[in-house]
Image (cartoon, rainbow, N blue to C red):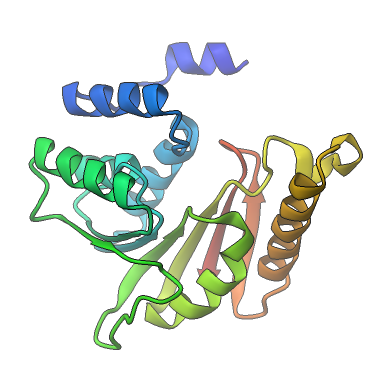
Length: 206
């Protein structure tokens, strides 16, 4: 089925994006899967999102995809210095410096000022810290804002913990499962988790 969908769905790409995909493969840098980013782009379009706060830039693939195929502006935070430098280069290649603002910082320590307000918060960083990211940055959401979180199924292991042998992986999966429970039962949001990409949640502020 995935092969069929890959063959029939339109490809959102250009030369710069293709080079970033190749870079991610060479560096073994995890990036959002194609079906997940395509859904995110459609969500931005249909919800008329103008501003996105992204936690976890990596090499700027998702930020560039969002800025290229929608009218939104992206503010993105990346902790890893090497990834940040590559992201800067990729944003310049895509000629999106006026649409994407990237900062090098630990998102849990970054002093975001109260005058920033965003239509959508996209969390795609250290999975063990998702609840902390959510709680720190949800205050910067506009009324009826949206939170999208990626990697919530963790290669299917969240639903099959009995298959995990590594103690570290078990602890990580337990934290992801805890976040899933946290957002599903958060009374301030309507949330669903979808089996898209590696597990994508959409939480709409009530």
